[in-house]
Image (cartoon, rainbow, N blue to C red; front, side, top):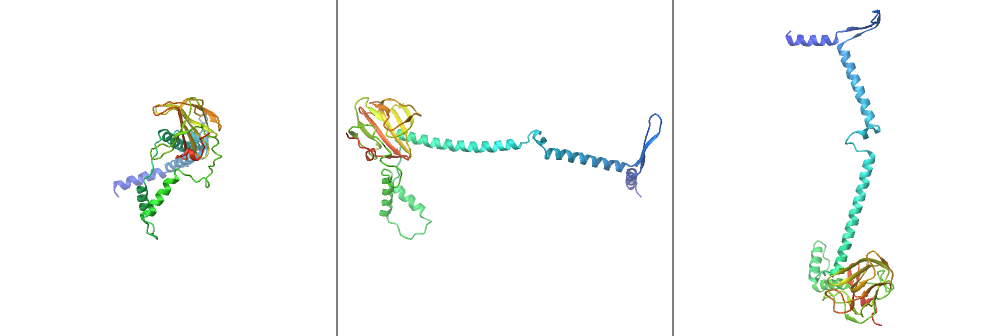
Length: 291
């Protein structure tokens, strides 16, 4: 038997060797308690005690509210608040994008920056979209040009029978007077110019809210009113404005005085534009400007 085996047997023997543990009275030396114990039993008892204490601590933290006091642990309320903040943030982003899109539309109205698709490009886009589709009838160039022409005309001639826009929706013309320059898309003049005397009252065509009322270098005092059903009315070259941004106006209410302001003016007149869902409309199709 080698030395290593002897050491192992000696170590095991020490672990299982029983000892007598006696508790006696200090003064009388009277024996109170005695019991046998070994090093192995002490070790096992210590392991069991440590496991019980660890399990108790884990259960008290995992299944009670004590876990919320641990640094870095997020509570249920914090998680709920985080989810609510996420929804609020998403709603704010959506609202911001909508407002940004609306402001871009207002900017396009002010600058008359409208781009119209070329019929040839529309024909090419239609051909690209229909490449993967089964071809039942061979298309001809005349048919594509007709579709492009009809689509182009629909921008300026809305179908009043299929929409909610009626002549009753636009109650009153903004002013009465001769037309010096009419609606002309080829010249990018998306309005009618009504010749008026100085300080002639300009009226709102319908109930709405003022979304823009400021001075611009090219068109002088400008006021834009948002009406229901996606309608915008624009009044330019005014001498003065009687309404501010955010004001609610009624149809026929005076909102400005006719003037000759701005770099692009050619005399006392009202430059009046009518927009529906982002498209310019010919106001003469909705109003009678003659006396």
